[in-house]
Length: 143
Image (cartoon, rainbow, N blue to C red; front, top):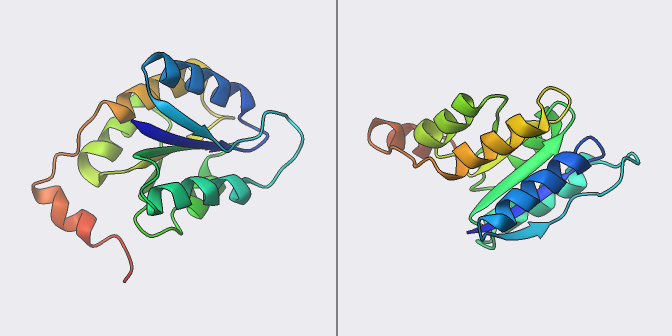
């Protein structure tokens, strides 16, 4: 799989652990995030991940900021992006099963690195159920 990842200053250690996990699993990772704790603007990284999804350059995206909210809101401005803010493995699974989410947003200040990696693993390994959920997913995007 091709995966784009972006993070602000709250997530460098999270990104490092997630990228290591993804590369060990054989995924191709495009890294747009910062590697320092110096203050940066999360939209700069969310837009790059969102554009990769929009243009078909990535199968999935991962975005990380302090609360996960701002970076998710920004990613969701892109057509075709369904970014889900997740704080447990179970929510990550439901985001895929019911919402066909293609970007996961991780709140670095409210989850551990281990939880974040487990959420990414669950997110990438869970299929969309389709069926009754497909009609709802079809109504998400604005025309």
